[in-house]
Amino acid sequence: MIGIRPATAGDAEAIAAIYAPHVLHGTVSFETEAPDPAAMAARMAASEGLYPWLVATQTDDFGDAVVGYAYATRFRERPAYRYVCETSIYMAEPVQRRGAGRLLYEALIDTLRAQRFVHAIGFIALPNDRSITLHEAVGFRRAGVFREVGYKQGQWIDVGIWQCELNAPATPPVEPRPFRDVGLVRA
Image (cartoon, rainbow, N blue to C red; front, side, top):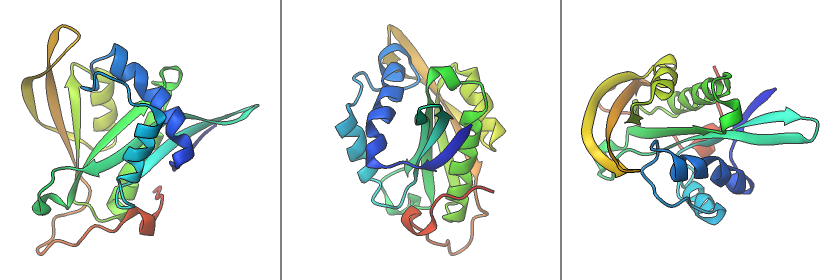
């Protein structure tokens, strides 16, 4: 059974272990060195309670194991961008294409919607049909592409931009609510 819950500092080791193969053996992340658990814990703490970090857990005979994580971060630094966030999701290989990623990403999107963010932006290293399918299944639409902006594993990589409208833009805009005040939301 798959469960979804907010990530804690105690999940940093599992999160780092899930992320490492994506960094070291793939092109979906443009990092070239896998962050250790302390670095992951620092990234979670840097969200300062505004942006959610969620984990998917799978229950077995030994308890709950973290099998994926999704999070939101600031889209850009300048203040006018504060109504928009960037999202990311990473799943352990054994649970990919089994529905856990969609459950996790839907929970993230529902939470961001409740926080009153206007748009979520997802960047996808191309080609990546599985990620495109997942993003579009939860409401993202292709917004553009950056051509040959990353070089990793001996190749130039394009990055697709996917955008999801979370809430209709208001004038004046409504400030996003911190995750620490909203908590996990699942529609």
